[in-house]
Amino acid sequence: MELSSEKKLPKWKALILASRPPFLQVTLSSVMAGILIAWIHQGAIDAFLAVLVVLVAVFLHLSVNLIHEYWDWKSGTDNINVNAFRPFTGGSGMIQLGAISPTEELVFGLSLMFLGAILGIYILIIVHEALIPLLLIGFIAIFSIIFYTGSPIKLAHRGVGEFFVFLNFGPLMALGAYIVLTRNIHLEPVIVGSLIGLLTAGILIINEFPDAEADEKAGKKHLVVRLGLAKARYLYAIVMILPYILTVTFALMHMLPITILITLLGLPHALKIVRICFRHYNDFKALFPANIGTIKNHLIYSLLVIIAYLITGFFPITFFY
Image 1 (cartoon, rainbow, N blue to C red):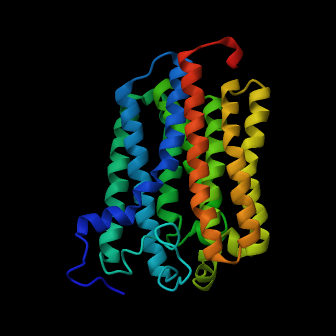
Image 2 (cartoon, rainbow, N blue to C red; image 1 turned 30 degrees about the vertical axis):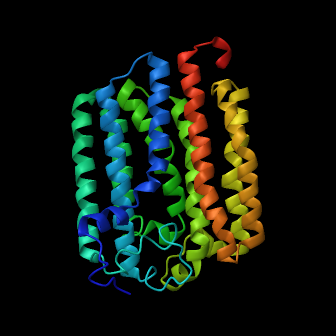
Image 3 (cartoon, rainbow, N blue to C red; image 1 turned 90 degrees about the vertical axis):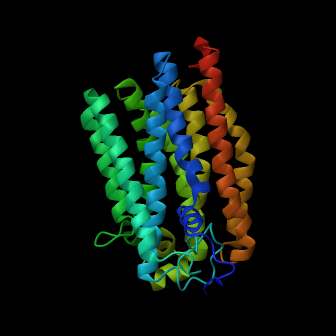
């Protein structure tokens, strides 16, 4: 179905919508966590470098949305998906509406990836002392962008896409930001990034429920397809509840500040959307509040993490750790 000429979106607007900027919350939360932890550990940070790190992360995230959607169009899954609730599941729909061509979307995605890579190289020149770990993080990021659904590797098709989403949008983003600002490696940003990354994987997993039928027909055998909807409920429940359990564990072990326990305020909401998934896992209209609720849960947890670290930074009391 194509838009009529009088209703057609401007090309630039369609490209922006195709990149799905609202999902940038998953990137900004992990990067901000890494920045705040670096600030607390050092007492000060280079604001210019912090801005560059945010820009690199944003460009790379938007690029993967576009490139991934191009490959989903090529495999046919978005074209046959009748259960999609766009833009949350089934892609942005900009190609299907005729607002942009597949080639335009791919070129825009590759351009953003290239821009992110150039800024990343500039950062490497500045912080050359941390060249090796940052190169490794950058390599994993570019590899994931190209091959998440791209041939010939197709990570998402092989049931490891969820892991790479957790890895890239969680510990690697937080650690990468921390390394740039401190030139050191530390376990704390890895832990916090992993907690946020689990909830990011939860967004992907719940969105795979309505997409599963079309994805299976197109050969995209992600974990929800491989497990089946009924069993995939348990995977979803684990990634939604585990971060709260681990938050308490790491705080009690003094590996995270005690202020991090304010994230438990989000637990009732997490339990609520897990119950929705268990009850309506095969009724996608009734499941939709869980799709929205999972994004909201990620936002609540991430904001509370940021607040926890701001409290710890502005009121440096030994008891916090």
